[in-house]
Image 1 (cartoon, rainbow, N blue to C red):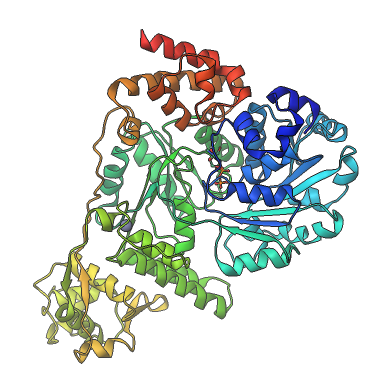
Image 2 (tube, protein in one colour):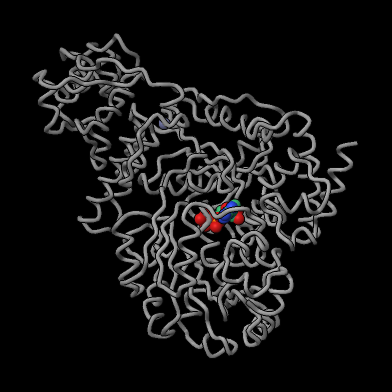
Length: 618
Ligand code: ADP
Ligand code: ZN
């Protein structure tokens, strides 16, 4: 560790061999989380290391902390400038000498970073993949050279995932270009295929691999059939007043319409999609970082650059492409470990839309088959009667015993019913109308609705016409979706969503197989009621009194963040403010005992927060 850093944190050289000391002094965290400790020891021992942790488990620390304990400068490869800057900002607030190099940077800023690099003072240098692949960083570094190379979002190197980036392929040469420098690759993408790709393409065959559980216990899951999407969304958002969150839509048009509508309803919302004017895009993304209580409505173009730890909710108004995408997108909530809620509405139309996107896409037939299988798995998750967490983790090959208590099927168990007779009718209606019609028409036939179309095709004369009058159209919709999820039928997009029977349907017809169906709920079943300006109190169990203190602390944090031009969470995370509000430290030493208060932050803002607390106690 550079002399200056050692002095700053009051760590003698002996303590350097003790990462826990560094964690406590610099970050102010009392303990390592999960497998951080083991990873850090592997990196400090200069071994190539692959880290597979879900979002929020604290991957950054796995290279940032070793960078402080090791000689030389650590280079961190990151796919997005926004991410790099965010991390550099956070490190600087901790008192760590860090910088970034990217192409559109001002020359003076770049010169300053290079100077620190040459002097060996720079502990962490963030760069884009192109920059490191261009070479020369080792010779630009001080006499101690490079300590390690961290490859963040390492899954971007794999074709397999949905975030492949061509510029990551160049990282395959790192081992040759920087011999002897350990590589730490990190990702939140768990699937074995991507994992193998990373090891192979980065050329780190003997990397130590660390895989943590992918369970995100603090995130709740809720998936309900779409009935009245606006009302359903509003119901959900009401529980999150004053909090930041993301609403995902499939199309740019829907993003724009949704934002407009939310603003009309008095909800502060901004939009983000790939085609947005770059300046506005940057401004909206920045607003999301800097402000509290903003709802960002976006397409999946908004994602990787989000470092904000206190995203309290993620809502999906359209079906994502796969369970992988769903988990990645919902995973942006609750990185700080505090409770976060996710919510999705879906319907038959979504499935059709996705089938169309796959069929019309330019992937090879083999990839399309995989994409269809992934979509099917997601539809299965939507229609499951079992614990959603168990189903999701099971999909990633991780065992969970179920009954998580934090998903909609667990908190409000799904009622099921014997739907064998209904299924037979539903299948018969498809068959008798020649497997040529979409769900809307077939339901008209079942419910005996006389329309121009049912007359024209002579369907009013069929035996199945009106045979399903005991259920309304919404229930038949639900039945068809479930038949799809059960793989008894499929839909053809190029025949306008015509439903076809699959082979397995025969067993149902012959009554060799019974069909259990779920009874749908279309009303969001959050347990919490709106609590006015902010829901933090209900969320973290703060008393009314503590909540007032918390709000005062939040105001102070916002003021500091404005003064410094950094995001509020860079000053202190919510978890730290909550601890201030409940434990009410009254001296700097008591403050240091709270998780998230390191030496540097205490020195910088300790007094300001102490005076807020003192005032609040009067
Ligand atoms: P990831 O990259 O895995 O999504 P981050 O590195 O962004 O996770 O960490 C998520 C949050 O957890 C950050 O706010 C970070 O400061 C915090 N964190 C990391 N390690 C610890 C720890 N040992 N104790 C407390 N908080 C931690
Ligand atoms: Zn559950």
